[in-house]
Image 1: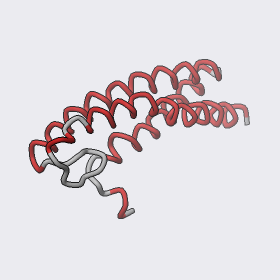
Image 2: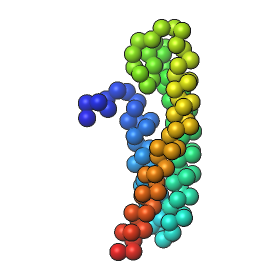
Image 3: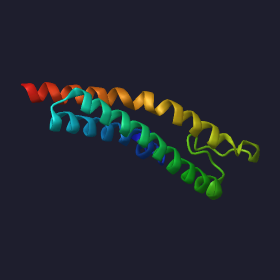
Image 4: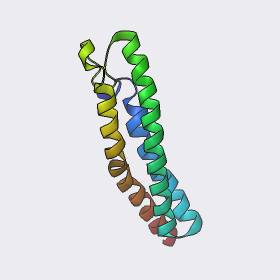
Length: 117
């Protein structure tokens, strides 16, 4: 996967998918309830998106100080684009829950299907 070695992308956006899936699957299997798995997925997604936002902002400041690059574009940018990291990460704060939540729902449902079989 040569396309995923662009810094923090896998850690901030792809690994949480596995965390949401596994967490909701475990909660649903543990309590035998889809609603418990769903609630776990919602809480994990909401807290995970906030944590991702904070970590990504701190990392964006470090990246910009090192080589004047954006965290999501990793290209050299002019000084007039300093706020671009904040704009991109704020959009991700709004969109990440909608991207991660289906994986939590799938995890809760798969866990219950395996539990009943």
